[in-house]
Amino acid sequence: MRPILASENRSLLRQYAWSKVLLAFDFDGTLAPIVADRDRARMRDSTHRLLKLVASLYPCIVVSGRARADVLRRLDGVRLRLVIGNHGLEPMRASGDFVRTVRRWVAMLSARLRGLPGVDIEDKRLSLAIHYRRSRRKKQALAAIREASAELAGARAIEGKLVVNLLPPNAPHKGLAVQRARDSLCCDTALYVGDDDTDEDVFSLKEPGQLLGIRVGVSSESSAPYFIRGQAQIDTLLLELARLRAKSGPVQGAAP
Ligand SMILES: [Mg+2]
Image (cartoon, rainbow, N blue to C red; front, side, top):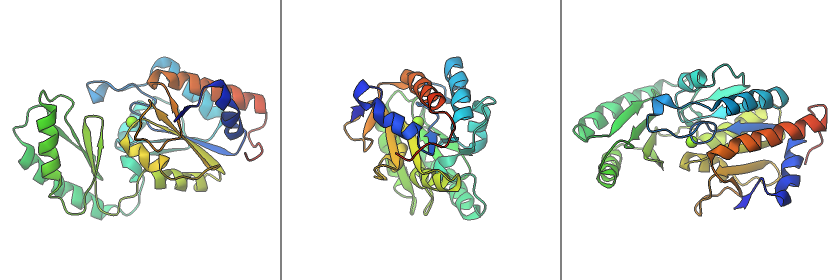
């Protein structure tokens, strides 16, 4: 992994900024710092301001694991071209099967995990997340969550930062969501920033020249070719993107 903000990589960032690029961001841990109480997650004022500026210069989207309505509230008035929730499941027209599956799973998991302190199930209608950030015995909590989830037929489990995400069979993922958005918004390239394991669905697309994957924080297991050091650096990246596009004049530049 290489640091995207290092001087030797600025020309790559510039090439993307001057192309017909879609900027796509994860929310928690990327635009907003991770906090102990997930209901309190929000962008810093500086990030909010910079995202607003960047969204006036580029087509921008957010792709989050949160339910779409939940992310929309947290954007606090920043208008984006698309807000995708539930790891790519929202917005979606025919979602009845997913809703029924998740409803069944929530009932099963609630019964199985009842009595485990600090473990809570977030029902996002189209997918669910089991959080164990508040557990004092995290190893045991994770083991119990893994055991219970293994019984759910066809479930895709993606383990993240003190959370296990469970997606119903045949659910799209963040990678597909970014590809679709890039096409539907008539962009040639995409730049994606994310911090967690569900973002690896984007990073592992391997579309050189068409996708620039940037992970928040270095990880030896990540497929992302580039990184920013930590969540606080998102402001520097947004500022740099704003500067580059402001210099390039009209929005439609040459392809990289
Ligand atoms: Mg995240």
